[in-house]
Amino acid sequence: MSTQTSSITSPKEMYAALKAKLRDVVPDVELHYKSEIAAEINRLKQERNAVILGHNYMEPVLFHSIPDYIGDSLELSRKAATTDKDIIIFCGVRFMAETAKILNPSKTVLIPAKKAGCSLASSITAEDVRQLRAKYPGVPVVTYINTYADVKAETDICCTSSNAVAVVNSLKTDHIIFLPDEYLARNVARETGKTIIFPTKNPKADDELKYDMIGWHGRCEVHEKFTVEDIQNVRAQFPDVVILAHPECSPEVVTAADFSGSTTAMMKYVERTNAPRYLLLTECSMGDNIAGANPHKEMLRLCSVRCPHMNEITLEDTLKALQNTQYVIEIPEEIRVRALKSVERMIAIGASGSKD
Image 1 (cartoon, rainbow, N blue to C red):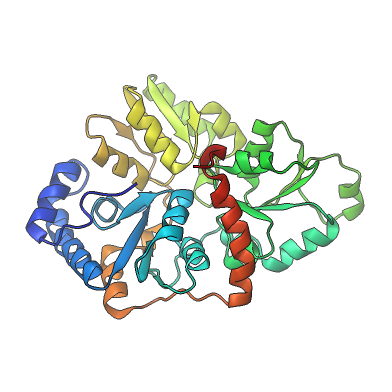
Image 2 (cartoon, one colour):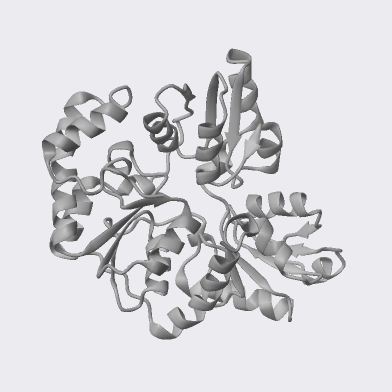
C-alpha cells in the first residue's frame, strides 16, 4: 500500500496533512516538531533516490508521513523485490531489512536503528535448523519471515502470518518442520488439521510420537502476553467490542477473538466492517495507525505491552540514516543466495495462497 504524504517536502503542508489524520491521536506540539523532520526526510529521499518501506507497527507520525509503502512483512518484501531505487530504508526491525537485502544485493539497504532485533528471530539459530534436519531427514523446513538471513539459508520456504497456511498446504508431504514461532505453528496446525509436536531433550520419546508438524519453542515477547482473561475483561466492559488477534497470539486467545490475521488483514477488516468499537491484540501503535486512517471508528487499546524493538525506529534516526548512510545491512553472499530461494518461494505464493 502506498501513502499520499511520502512526497510532501513542505513542513507546513506536512503538518496540515498529519493534523487532519492524527489530531485525536498525537498532541499538536508533537505534530509540529515531527512535521519538520518528516518533510526533510522526504526532501532528502528524493535527492538520494531512496525508497522508504514502513511496517504497520511504526509509530503514528512516522507511519503516516514518510513511507512510500506501508504494509506487513509479505507486502513489504514484495515491494522490496521490485523497487528501482538506489537506497532502501526499512522502517522495521532487522530481519525485515535483511530480507530486503536478500532480494536486492546491489542496492544499499539501511535500517534506522543499530540493533532493532526481534525475540522470535533470536530464538533460533542456523545450527538449530541443521540439527533438526539431521534428526528429521528429508522433512521440508518452513521458516517464519521473523528470522535472520542465516536461518533462512537453511530453509526450504519462508512464510508470513498472512500466507503461513497457504505455504504449509502447498507442500504435498506427510511431515513439515515449522519454525520458530510456537503459537503461529499451533494456530496453523489447528487450521490445517495437522498434529504438531515440539522436540524435547529425549530423542527416544520424540520418536514414539505421531505427528504431521514439528515446531519450535520461539515466541513473540509482545503477543505471548495477551490472555483470554484480557479478552474477558474487555468484553465485560464493552460487550459490543470486536476483538482482532494476531496469529502470533496463543491458540486460546485466537479462538476467543472474533478475527485473526496478519497486520494488514486486521487493517482491512476494520476498514471493511462497521462495529461499534474494535480492539487489536498486537503492537499498540497499530490501533493508533488505524484510528488515523479511520477517524470515525473507535479503537480500544491494550498498551501495557509494547514492542521495544519496533519502538527503536524513530523519525530522528531515519533522518540520520539518510544523511549519513548509516547502519548498512550486509549479508555474506553465500548465505544471501541460499536464503533468496526460500524468500522467493514465499513471495510466489503470496498472501493467502494467491499468485498475484
